[in-house]
Length: 178
Image (cartoon, rainbow, N blue to C red; front, side):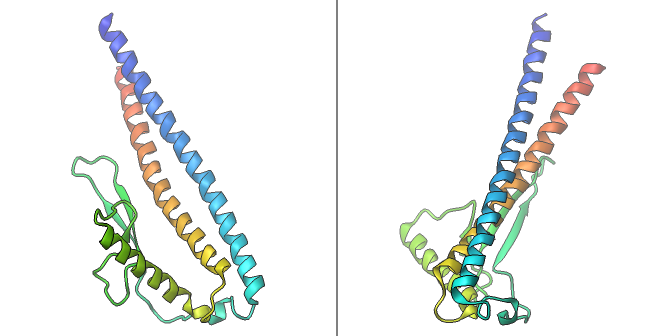
């Protein structure tokens, strides 16, 4: 009797964990939708204020460039869910130097300050194709789409968590049937 009760508590805990992960996943997708909507509105506003001739695809440099943002996937040895990490603003001149890692923050405030300066320089460099005087609305657009990318990484991690919770719950249900 006591063991059945303990097993039910375990099943309930797994079901609650699954439902909580699913709720967080849905909240993140809603947040992504809002962030993307905001980014597109800011882009339209920047295009309106700067002029359509300055904000369009014809001003983009179509040469091959190294990525300023990369995705790092960490697989666990125990075979559980992988962890996704976003590494942003890797300088094209210092490709081995990572300026901003979404899940790792430097402890030293001097290092953080210099990193912020480097990140700002890299952001400005990427917007320089639109001219010397960049609209604050275009900068806001850039930040909105950066936030959307971070949210996508959070969604990937949460989806991994949902799948892991579902697998555990499904296994527990199958074990109960036997």
